[in-house]
Image 1 (tube, rainbow, N blue to C red):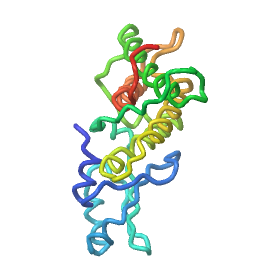
Image 2: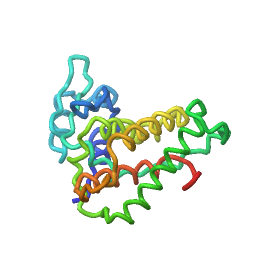
Image 3: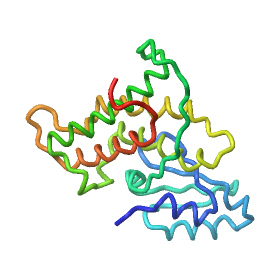
Image 4: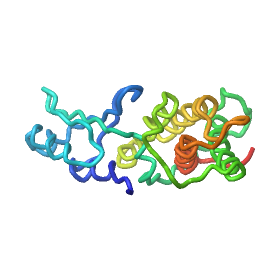
Length: 210
């Protein structure tokens, strides 16, 4: 089933919700849509609860809605990344102090995962979003979840966003690899992480190789 969770939430709310917190334990969005649309918060929360993929939706005392989704990994299935502008960062020095290197190298790593996955037989099909449940995977998802809101913002802050996504992906690449290591067999979690790498590759601006 194609996941259109983010799109469905935006349609019901009238705007993309904003991710909140770290997502380490649960994937939470918040929105002031009820206040902006002058809809009773409890009524709008009930509509949100009917959206497939929503585990919980409730109104806070201040009128904001708190929404919990059951499998945040589903967002990579329907991700429609905007065309991020080229920041114009210098290519050198190629150190972690240079944000241009940090972002470009993350893109290079995501591209390398695609090549390695093809060589090692990690399929793109059979994606199980619930397997993107480790802390490193969730940190990448948490940053990616900002895309819909930033895309409609007057000041999206793409440069800072790109650095945060790149840093989160570097950690995931090193600690939650998308390809089998050593004699490890190909498992469904590798397909899930390959799909996550594909999402990062589609968002960040950079070359395929350095």
